[in-house]
Amino acid sequence: MSKYLAVVSNSVKKSLVYRANTFIMVVSTFFSFVVLFYFWSSIYGQGNKIGTYTLAEIISYYIFLTIFELLVMGDGTAWSIGDEIKSGQITSSILRPIKYLEYKFSQSIGSLLFRLMIFSLPIIGALLLLRDYLVAPGSLMVYAFFALGAIMSYALYFLVFYIVGLISFWTGDSYGFFFAAFVVINFMQGGLFPLDLLPKWFLMVGNFLPFKYLFFVPVGIVTGRLVFDYTFVLIPVLWCVALYFIANLLYKKGLKKYEGYGI
Image 1 (cartoon, rainbow, N blue to C red):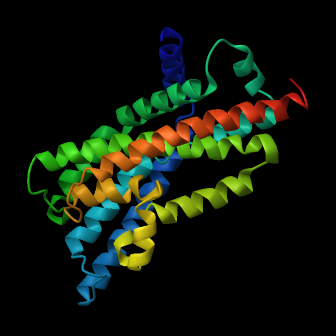
Image 2 (image 1 turned 30 degrees about the vertical axis):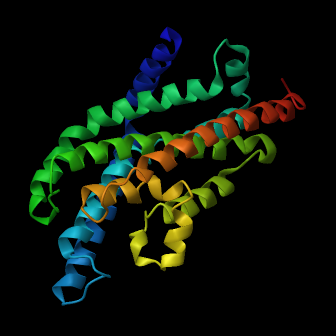
Image 3 (image 1 turned 60 degrees about the vertical axis):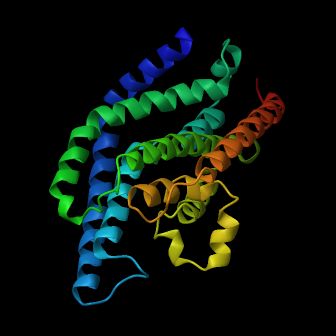
């Protein structure tokens, strides 16, 4: 356990060194939100609307999308794994008495702690500033359900992109694949627009896939668009278990491929 705690600590320190990357991420995310805020305000100001969403609901949706982008989606797990495989740095991890999945998850936790330290106060300030545009949950239990959904989202997000990163064992330079995977996953999780604006058949299929539980479900709970259901926990848990075993299987097969050209 102590060795993984050390990895978490080192990840925080490494994030502090690369402050420029954090600044660029903040500026780009903030700019995207401002554009979307004025876009939707203009749309609704002209008497138009999107689906059954009120202005407060659609703004709340994109506020939480921005928060998820800062805290969860900026992790870079797939890119980190791809770089280690491509450069051969993964060899040092293979030779150490640690499990690679747990090692990368510890790094991810460290990165998350760093982003929480940096972004918590700005996020709270933004929520207070935009409180008139936020949909207030009906009860305090909603926050508990949202927190549970957010935890499941984080675990799923890590496992999905951990697996995406492992594809580098077979493809080498995988940035094109990573970008394509990110675009598809971002669409499937509701990162472009709310999923309940899509046809019902799409939502039915999405109920059994992991992607909607990455973002759409937890945000739907906290904004009141979804009523909490036990399947919102059961399905992500089952997917986490399945993806964990898939990830370990791919890693073992990937090592055999990697051993063929270097270790």
